[in-house]
Length: 108
Length: 114
Image (cartoon, rainbow over all chains, first blue to last red; front, side, top):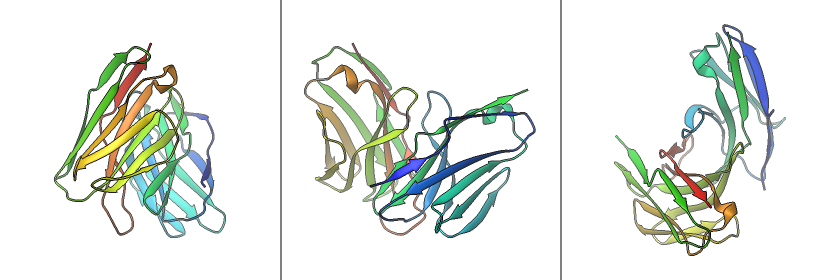
């Protein structure tokens, strides 16, 4: 089975940096995804890591360590529109299993 | 380009009534298809997935069922809804085979069972 843990909530100031951690224990691993979900909407894809290291995509970066079962999503230069839930998901064969999500609140 | 649509977007149903949510994908063939449910303030729970027509894998035992009558059509059903079936239902698709295959979600269907 899958066990995916991430913090429930985080708060940060506009323009700051926030790091959302995700730890996982899985019976198989085909990659780790990060999704953003605004309230009442469907999740949208942010990033994908399958090898160890950092993937950078504009203001968002994602890091993976397979040996530690650990990933983080780094949000830089926070904007008010970044207030959302961020979901960590682990791929195993056909399935993506999601963590409960981290609600990020950006304050002015 | 590929698109995914699900309907209805919102529905309010009494306990014990039937349910049918439909999802279709355009612009791709033989996708992997998924139904997830998200209870209020919770994460996404995988309910069913399908890797081909007529092939359904169930992740959680419950009073829901899924069917895939056509390659790009995925239906979620219930004969008798329970209060606990309330939630945000999301259909999703993914390319079959390979790695780096992200999941693309439909707009979601919000179900309230009263």
